[in-house]
Length: 322
Image 1: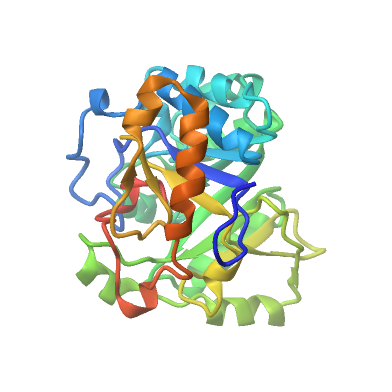
Image 2: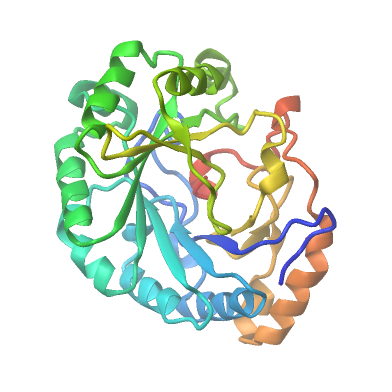
């Protein structure tokens, strides 16, 4: 089992397979993607070695992220490889959802258990303004397809200062009959978007108080769960989650590590630098990767230091998939 010097155990790997994305979300890639080309990202064989090493160390959940992971031509191969790796019990992915209507059933058959979809507004005009793409209707049809396929569906929505009461009420009305988990995420500061963060950051604490006052009740976390505090209400088909990285003791329950598409291990979303492991992955020697992971985990810090304004090497969230 992977365990750091603070006694935290790591069951959960967030694996980025590409940094590319064809959306232009205001809080991530407002000017579009201008990063590395696909030939600079890990190959299928390198991903295979990586997955086997993490599984050997007790990792039971893998989330495939990007960028937009489905932009890789071999995404289905990566998905099947992940789900067929002995020891990996749960496979999730994060996507903008624009291709989900067509492929949800295929992803399920390939071994996918859970999909997280970014929807920052249920108003088509506001959705287009935030994402740079007028595709809300297509994404919502994709949600229906994912539910029909039997996938566990979560929806991610970033809290921004223009997050109005009417926007919240629209989401709540939607959750009455929609069997998904809607997670509100505090905007996190990144190197490229300091001014946007200062203008738009909104704490999730008032929203948590509002939900509790409305009768929403906390749910227990799974051992491989992400960082969300989740709530349920007997009158709603859906659930609500809150991800508040600036809250006290947020990092105390950290259970996840990240590997970027170019093959760097990130001990934290906001680490100063990723630790290159591509040369080890290229050899295909699983035991060498295992020894490397055990050795470098001692470098993991107790907290992300976001509250001190330190964003590390993370210029934008597409670099590591959040």
